[in-house]
Length: 241
Image 1: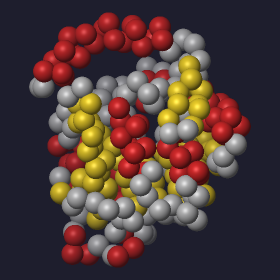
Image 2: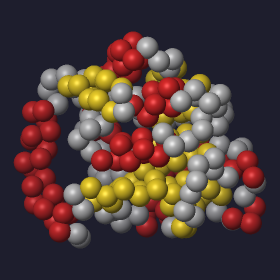
Image 3: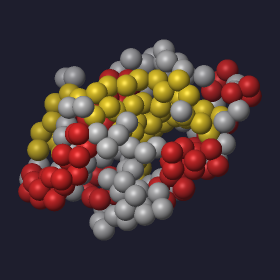
Image 4: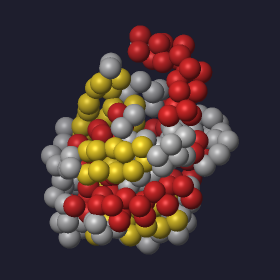
């Protein structure tokens, strides 16, 4: 474990109590000209580095005219950035507070955004050109809707359920981008991805306070069978994980 990780682990109860207190009231968050509201019970994109790392990456893409999904969108920052870039953007979530938050931020920014209540892909259309995901990744069962943004389930159920659907979409030509902490032991997650015929390629990395956040593209497990349609439209460093 890194020094930063050891400090965070030691302070974990304090940090959780502070975050619970801070999250009791609506907060404002500004990013690259977007002025958003963060409602209680919704993942705050400014307090955790993963969202901004993914946002930086998405802002470098050519999304004009493309269909785009932010899965588990929370405040909708990523989807709204995609909409501003000209994408036909959709934001989905299962958390009622997040769905209300998405509606508020759509109205606040004036950007076009489809909002869908969906448990992963259950109620989503069959195809998107691009999917962006900032998933929960701690192996613990969530106790409420707000904790779904952090905890993937004791057996990483979030990934067990999502990777088969993502694999089908990748095979159909969808580009899938996912941000994860470099401090994690990613082997269990990538083992689940491999079981669904996927592998991860490192595209973008950013570090803050000693914690690396990494954007991966999920591609087909066998690189020799990757169709051109599955190749990313974003410049990449192809470092397979």
